[in-house]
Image 1: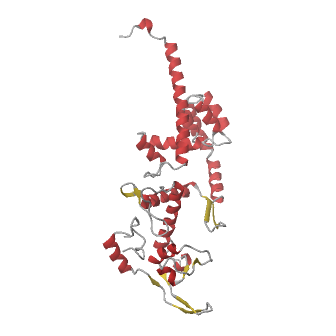
Image 2: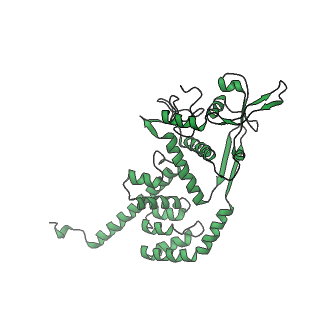
Image 3: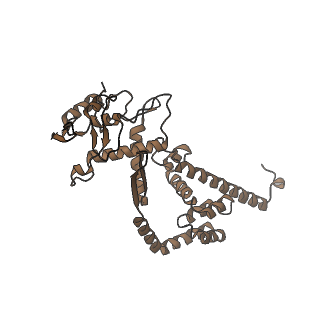
Length: 339
């Protein structure tokens, strides 16, 4: 039993509790900084659909607590005054968590003053009132976001296509989830530690080769989403021809990568011969014949390289592409030289 004569007095205990709490808040601020960077760099994309789910697995946080940590971490990225107050132990995590629900760069200074003066309960009450009053501003902000939506797609000098845009939060969330699902489909591990590749000009990774970066995985995932959308039809009421990507390929190129001939998109941009062969595996085909001067003399009927019945038979037999190292198991037929 502890000797009460040598026990610290209550004031000392109170000071130690307050000091340790401030240290914990400062440590929490550092933790949130790390979570924000980890989230922004997509460190959770190795099999998890969100940073919160990764946190639940990695540090055993409850799902709700993990989502809150990620939300607060993201919010503090644009609220430096609140972030600094938490890091110095001036505000508790409980107060900061509530204030980040309503704070903006324009209002955080006022809210910080409320946080310093009141208890956590007072702060929670202030935030509830602030949210009621702020509904009009919230509607205006939603309208501003909707007006500011944009997506630009243009071709760079080297032929690469650049995509830049701003999406409304809910649309962005759908895109993020879709990309995550596409990445999982493309890069999930089937055997060993080798991520599945894709057909043609996106080779499968093999031992000793560099693994694709997160940015490269995102690019591959976006390509899969686009191809899947066109394959299954985005608007059933619209003519499919409007959404087709046309590649003009000389016949010899399809049989031999080294053969002379063109392989270009409809706007004249060249594409690799290997890409043409991959697309020709499972595409609508129209044979056009030209005279020596380049004039069209004959246009054949549109056909598919792989008819639906043959596709079903291939999927039943192969369960995907049989090209060595290719992990694609849906959406495309085999390579021209699979077997």
